Image (cartoon, rainbow over all chains, first blue to last red; front, side, top):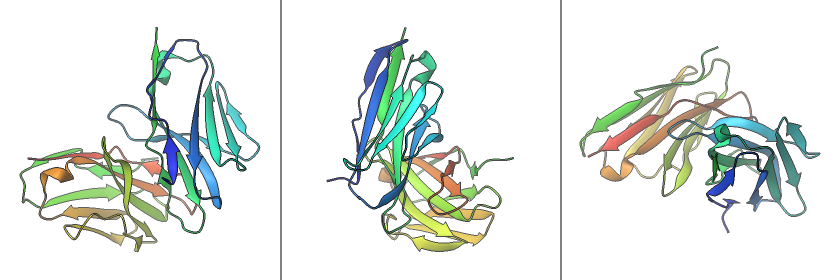
Length: 110
Length: 113
C-alpha cells in the first residue's frame, strides 16, 4: 500500500459545482497534513493546512479523519480558476520526510 | 520577501554532460528539500538538509546524483553524467522547521537529449 494515495481524476465539473477529494495515508502516527495546489507548469503552493477539528477558508473546507486515516478537501461554488492539481501532504510518523500524494486533477468548465 | 530562487529555469543538455542545478532557500529556513517531478512518478523527494547537513538522501536515484549545501543560503544538485531518463522538473523547497509547510521554488525544467 502506498503511503499517501489520491484518486488522480480528472474530476470534470461545471462552474458552481461542489467537489470533494479524499487522500488516504498509511502511517497512523502521521502528525501534520496539508493541501497544496499546483497549476500547470508551476510549482506546488500551499492551499491550506488541515487541522484535527477541520478548518475552512472561504469556499474551501479541509477535514481530517484519524480513525479512517484520510483527509479531505471540499470546494464549494467551483470557479474556472480552481482548475489545477491538488496534492495532499502528510508529515511525521517517526521521521521528518514529507510525503506527497500524486495529486488529483480538477477541471472546472463553463 | 523573496521566495525560493532556482536557476536555471530551463536546461537542455546532451546525454553525458554534467548538469548543475542551483537553489537559494528563503532566509531563516533551516530545512531544504530537493524534489523531482515527472508525469510517471509524480513528486519524489530526492534529499533534504537540516542546517546545511544532509539528513536523508535515500531518494537520490543513483551515484550520478549528488547534492551539497555549503552554506545556509545556497544548495546545488548535480547530475554527472546526465541521461535522457533524468528529464524532469526539479524543485527546491525550504521550510522554517520540522513538520511545517514547505515553500517551493519555480523549478528547473531539465531536458536531456
